[in-house]
Length: 245
Image (tube, rainbow, N blue to C red; front, side, top):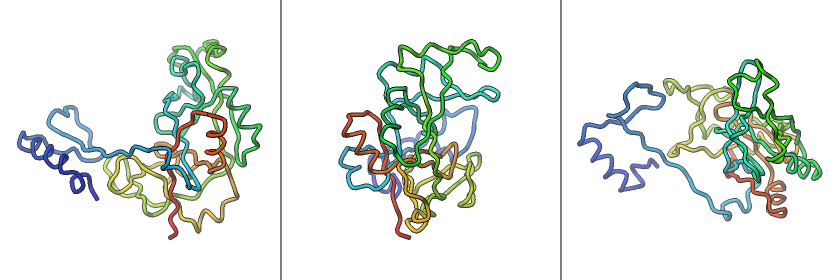
């Protein structure tokens, strides 16, 4: 069901916009002037009860510390990481970052499929490859910092979700890795997987989606979710759905 079908307030707003000559912007449409266009977005909000009973969840921390690339280097600027943050994500959630204390806690729990890699934290510099001495002091923000790098990769998302090209919105094949994932009726996406395909994946607590940027993410087991609750870790999650077929 679309937002216009489900929300009479949205229909009323759209009628006002149309009367003013403002028209909807198409997915992927790029224009210099957006003053005469509108977009409707529909996002979910979750409560803790929404996660109870789920087999899988997506890691989705509240803190965003978007990563950057310069040449061959992946890094995060020091100003994006704050003291006391336990988990952070890149804007799209494909990269999850943790400080040293959290890394030690996770690895001591011996989660299946969990691996980590060092995260470069840099001062405000346009290209750390040009000046590697610009590494930032992370002692005041719980450093060093790490990225979570699951050893297990999941199958492509369920056919319930579609993959489209970002520029024109044209459909892509299910096995495409680098397209935008869309879910009917929503602008955010809950990952869906086929149970029959998940049975072919080794048991895991951490896994990476088959899809990469801009729609990839890290999926975890209920065991990790319970671990965070038990140890009062502030991580953040989104539901993952399993389609029977």
